[in-house]
Length: 209
Image 1 (cartoon, rainbow, N blue to C red):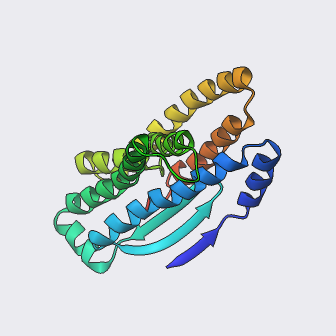
Image 2 (image 1 turned 45 degrees about the vertical axis):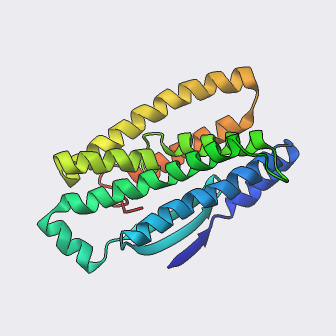
């Protein structure tokens, strides 16, 4: 298992410190880690092999890889492996929503109930955006893979990711103008970077999470 820390996280810490948003940023990062634990636990239950853990400016990321048994199963019935991927992708947002529901009914000792609920709903919704390799994109890719096969599913997933990003960019531009919040602009730029990295033509980066 490899551990990678993206050093751009230091820039984000400094930025959110001076914009007085450091508290909510740290809360989101903490619950993003809990979100990824959901992926990790379900992945291990489904006997997937952990490949990489990343700490990124916008949260954490857990990646799995296929072992020999998975590949053999895929040759016999590729849908089994794709269903595993879909379940793993769904597990993170479900964990975040469960935490939000729990804290709607209890009062935390040290943190604001509103901050915890808001952060976990935000994490769940953000990850369900249909952009690969976010959870939403992985779910769509898995469903399309089952229906159309590997090559066509990657092409369709890439197109959906680009269209979604264009829509989000328009919405983000309007939001930045009215809300004057630079965080929205940064998130949009990060998402474009992700899309270019994973959804370029002939990309081989669509891996298991």
